[in-house]
Image (cartoon, rainbow, N blue to C red; front, side, top):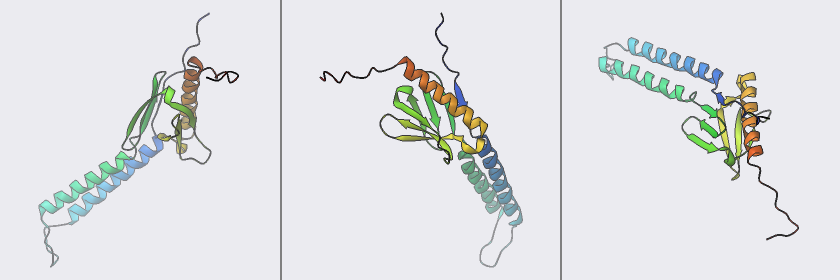
Length: 163
């Protein structure tokens, strides 16, 4: 009889958040470009604007747009070996032995991992706004964790004769 196959790997990104941040970044770049074009080589009486100021405004819009896009870069990838979480600025790579539970409360905006050391790691790639996709990702993460826990079960200590 063949052994039970391991659950399928899980990969999730926040689809709705990525769409919103892309639209916001595009609108921000467009607005700053319009401001730069309307900022003609003229003087207001106090400050005089030149072509370099117009280019700087467009560059500022591009930089702010890139900053907005950073908010949507989160991702989670998990397989039988462990879980890799990329949030806005930080990357975490954890073995399943470091994860106690996968949590996704009813009113939470995203899922989280409860770690064996008592910490909680937000998984902002699994957003409640993504609905069914988030549910599939959480179920996949839980299946991978349950599979790891079943394969590496730690026997309960015999309390009758403590060490």
